[in-house]
Amino acid sequence: MATTGSLHDSYTNGHAKDVHTNGNDIAQPRARRPENRSLSRALNGELKGSSTTLSSDQPSPTIMTSNGNTPAPDDDAPPSERATSAARREIRQRSKQNRLFPTVDYKARVSYFDPKSDYTDFRGFFVLFWVGLAIMVVTAMLRTLKETGYLLKFEQWPLFTENLGELALVDTVMCLSTALTLPLHLLFKRSGAQGWLRWELAGVVVQSLFQLGWVCGWLSWPFLREWTWTAQVFFTLHTLALFMKMHSYAFYNGHLLSTLNRLHQLDLPIGPQTPLGDAVRYPKSYYFEPHRDSLAADNTAAEAPPIRMHPIMQLREDLALEITSPIGNVTYPTNLTPGNFLDYLLCPTLCYELEYPRTPARNYMELFWKVLAVFGCIFLMTVTSEEFIIPVLDASRARLAQTNNIVDSALIFAETVSALLFPFMITFLLVFLVIFEYVLGAFAEITCFADRRFYSDWWNSLDWLEFSREWNIPVHNFFRRHVYSASRSMKISRPLATALTFFVSAILHEVVMGCITRKFRGYGFVLMMLQIPFVAVQRLPWVRRRTLLNNVLFWVFMIMGLSLLCALYVLV
Image (cartoon, rainbow, N blue to C red; front, top):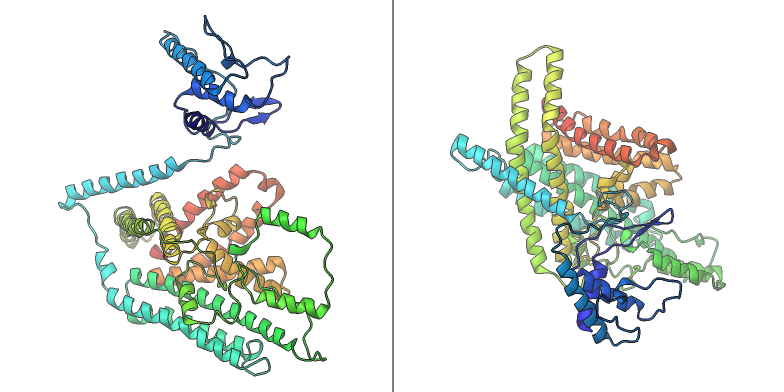
């Protein structure tokens, strides 16, 4: 029966479920063909029908009929006899395949790309993407070999190596300087619940001033030292990432410190000065958001009558739960150690938690492939910029310098934007893969970080708000937790909190673009803030229903926006 089970599995795994539309069965596309369809069909009927009895008015299955002098096995026949009958039938079917006009099986079914199809495995297109990039690189190598006698030309290579030593030293010092957050927090903790340096009074001010000076000082260093744009963009992105990490660590631990002080005050005699308000719930990271199954279980448990507790006891329990991790292994302040801070710096997340879900062990082979993929993507981005971006920008800059006509300048600018559309689409996809799939995946493997959901299906986005939630989940969770939710806690309305979140994000994007081009023009800030009215229009009911149109508009504006920003910052 081991053979029977494997054949049955191959058949059932190779067919998707049917869709029932208006009472008709429409077959779904299947991922692969079973190796032995007739025998698999017979055994499938055996396994599925062995425990059921056909009604008198129901036609018997074809596998139970027989041609010629081969009797069909009885319903109670042993499995070996039924398998033998199915094998004889399979042999007869093979003899019919030599017909001059073989029979074609027609029935109602959907295609793979049909909106009603439940087939979702399109990994072959991911493979096609890499094959296409390989073809692009080979073509560029042959063209360069013909023109220069070398396989590749790396005019940007000096940009990668010029400030490499200083970059490594300064970046290491910058990373180590984030650890000053830990002694600062311990200082706030020693101040006690009534000291002037407690978190609610001067602690949050001191921490905010320290963070402001820290980020401004490190972001200005590449400008003072006149680094190349390649070194500066890496250092800027790393600085902003560590700034968000530092902010999350400081403010979440500050909240836990306030909660712990309230819990200790309940151990003293209750008086008029004892704060008895509800426990403040800090927004949790997405790692611990409940799933549907757990929600259903919670709803079932909620049907039981609640246990009545004294308000003081309930408050004490709520405060104790707040300073304990959702997994239940770590409680504040036992997390205030250098090892915990270093582990947090290496984890691929921007939101601090007392502990994270972990994998049992590292997969070193997976880590090797991800590190190799990082350098491969950087190589492909370099080839793309050398062959298709920098020559276009250099030629357009020279043409604009030779004309004073506004119309001609506008035509040159439009031609530049159109020539950069496809190269920037490729570059954007490579940047997405190298950051969210390979770099973050490598750090997740190093730290055994279990939650690898760094992005969602942003390519199906219908508006910019949906894209901002799904294409960069670590940054989205940081803004949701430390900007949007913090604004809402200050009694700011939901639309205004959303606008404030976009405003802060637009400033950070403008800083990145300014560091790359050394031009602070505000183009990126304006274009990003324009997403708010676009989202308002796309959220209208009669527009929201047109999902295909919204997805097309998203991709059009995405591709045009990237090349437009590049042309604006470089040429204008």
